Every structure is written in structure tokens, then in C-alpha cells.
Amino acid sequence: MTNPAFARRGRALQPRQKSELTIINADGSGRSVIFTASEIIEAPNWTPDGQTLVFNAGGELWRIAASGGEPTRIDTGDRRDLNNDHVLSPDGQTAYLSADDGHLYAVPLAGGAPRRVSNTHATPHHYYLHGISPDGATLAYVAVEAPHGTRRINIFTIPAAGGPDTRLTDLDAPHDGPEYSPDGQWIYFNSERHSPGHAQCFRMHADGTGVEQLTHDERVNWFPHVAPDGSTIVYISFPPGTQGHPADKDVILRTMRPVGSGQRDLISLFGGQGTINVNSWAPDSARLAYVAYPLDS
Image (cartoon, rainbow, N blue to C red; front, side):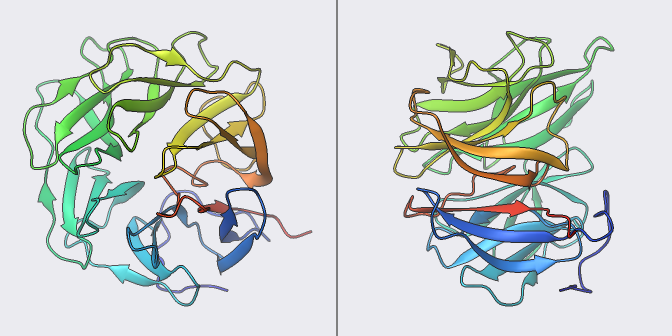
């Protein structure tokens, strides 16, 4: 179906392509498409009560019942230029957003005026949000920096209420997707720190120490998301040789234990960018959401 309220912004679907917002059980069973659109929708995550999914479309945030139905737009005031990196506070009251102006904002999940969280920097420092601590006090993000004219992507944290940025990584190799474990002790992320152009999944202590590599294979692995019960990680695995996390690839959603063992395929699909850019686990850790972008034959 087409939702005419979705703005067209950024990349578009190919002819005969659609976006399928899908829920699947953690064991790979029970796949259910709850909403289909002829525009790009991306990055679903769940409200803490498990009743609603929040996703991005056309630079805006939308909500839909986990059982399906029609989506409704979340009022974000004058910030209608959002990218797909958003997280929800543990109490379900606030959505934290990345906007195309390079800053982070907080808005009531019920809708309302945005509050800027991020800081102004003397040199380029473009914020991309990915994680929130279990107590809701700290946001984890990557910044695209260019302190000496060289583009770098590193991991930082910032208080959710606003305050100083804290650097956790300081490398030329790019990092992405920093996300807290449910106990707040670890930050999971992907990086090319050991092999340029070949992202793998890692974790480090919440203060940036003790980095551990979790995946070691020929595929390109992005966006490790920890289940709320801490038992399982899901990540998106691209074909060997993939640069970045592009759209329209034959990808695999894989799961593993928090230490990187027990890797197995959950489902193969046509997708990539937008499929699981944010943590898409249900609060009960029994299900997760993703977006596939199949092409009709």
C-alpha cells in the first residue's frame, strides 16, 4: 500500500520494490509483515510496553501498533529533517533524535517541541545517535569529525540532559552503532579498526577500555543490537567486499551470544540500510522487528 502522508526524502525505492515492516521470533519462526509501504521506511524500534513500533519515514518519526494497522506521525516540531538514528528513553516518555543539521534532539514521544541536547564545536562534529544507557542518563553516538581536514568517525557519549561530550575512541578507522548492554557495563559497536573497509562487531567497557572483537569472518558485519535480557545479539551481515552499510543487498540477520560465540543465521533478506539501524528487539527479548525491501518479480 502507499501511505501518501510519507514525505519523499533521500533515497527512493526501485520500481516494483516495497518496504516491509516485519516482526520475527528470536528463533527465526513466526515471521509476520505488519505493514507494507511503497516509500522508504527505516529503523524500527519498540516502545517499552511492547505495544508500539516507532520508525523513520521521509525525515519524520512514525508510530504503528505492533499488531499492525495505520501509522501515525509523531510531532517533532520544527525538526522534520531526521535521519534514521533514534532511540527511546527507558521510561518510554522521550525520543532522542539525530537531525540533518548534525545535532541531537529530545522530544516527547507523545509529540512536542524538540530540545537540543548536543553541543556546538569549533571544528566539524556531526552527531549520529545510536544508544542510551539503561538508566536513561547517557547517550552514545558517533561523530563525524574533521579536526585537521581528515574525516574520522569515532564514538562519544553525552548526558541525555545535555552536557560535555566524552570521547571513547580516537582512531582514524571508522566506528558506528554504539549501543549499551542492558547492565550498562558494555558498549557494542562495529568498526574497521583492524581491517580497513571490512567492518566487524566489537564491544568495549562503557568507559572505552577493554575492546574485544566479536566477529572474525569474511562478511561485513554491522549494528550489533543486544536483547533486553542480555542473552542474545542480532546484527546485520553484508556480503564480502561490501563498503559501508548500503541499501539493496542480499543480507543476513545473524544472532550470537554477547561474547561473540554461537553465531547462527536468523533470516536472509533483501535489505541493508534501514533494516536494523537501531535496536529493534521487543522488550520481552522474544521478538525483533526489521524492514525488508523486496523486489517483485
